[in-house]
Amino acid sequence: MPKRNPKSQLCITTRQKATDDKESVMRKVCYYDNDVEKPILAAGVIFVKGSGNNREVLMQKVLETDGTYKLSDFGGKIDLSDNTVVQTAARELGEELNFGMFQVKRGANVYLDQEGLKKVIQKNMLKPFYMPVAKYFLMFCQFNEDLGLDMEKIGDHEKLDKITRTVEWIKEEDFIKAHFEHNLHPRLWGKSILEYMGHHSAPRRPTGFAFKRS
Image (cartoon, rainbow, N blue to C red):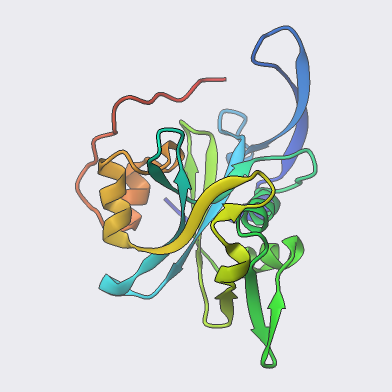
């Protein structure tokens, strides 16, 4: 899949039926490559560091209602305030990290707000993926040496949504293992992502979960 420019994935406001089919709601929708058959309802980001067998990805371990943990990227639904998928990913990244990512500038740690995170995502883009089943746009980005994480500020809870989670660097092999053990967020299921993560045999989609079609 060729590299795409996520800045071209502009979002428009549209009116959609609510889940009970009794009323409609306003929401933003993007279209991959401006194709109305490829809607994007949510977007996220995964940071990558290292190379070869030492490559790792930054993930959340989110506590589920059954007491288990599931690996997830940093992302979520497009808000009415978002104009691009990068803006969505930057907003979600900041909220889910409690704005604990910083950039070292002239020897000082400068904490990144939503605009700063957006610039980092745009500058450090490695590979974007469109996930058609989940209607999800995922961006892999390089975690450069000038970036850092304040783990004390990040903590073990997302403050905005009060979600219990930890933030950890995960080895590629553990990401792949989580997929086959049903411990990976379903929006990240996909052969293209597994191949990008270094797993080249055709995956079998985990059972027991189906995306709700809109």
